[in-house]
Image (cartoon, rainbow, N blue to C red):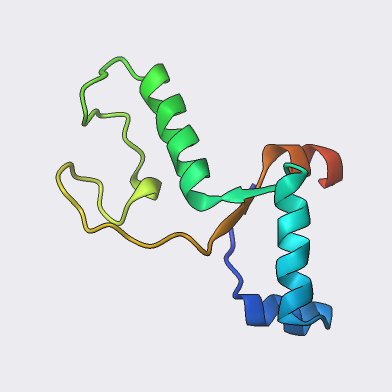
Length: 98
C-alpha cells in the first residue's frame, strides 16, 4: 500500500464538487468508519508499535521514522495534523481492489 496527500482544493477540482460537499462527504465517511483523523491513526500505530517492541521505554529501536521528521528521540515541535484524514483499513478492505 502507498500513501499520498491531497489538498481539499485538489480533491474538489478533481471531483467537480464544492468545498461544502467535500466536507459533508468527509463527515459521512468518518461517521461510517472509512476515514479517521491522522492523530487517531498515529496514536493507534504507536500503541501497536509499543506492544510489539521488546523495549517499552519511551524510545526504542522499533520506533518508525515515518512517524516523525527525524528518527531520533527527544522533544520535537508539535505539528498540526488536525486537517489530515486517513483512509481506514475498513475502507481498504471494503473498496480496495485485489
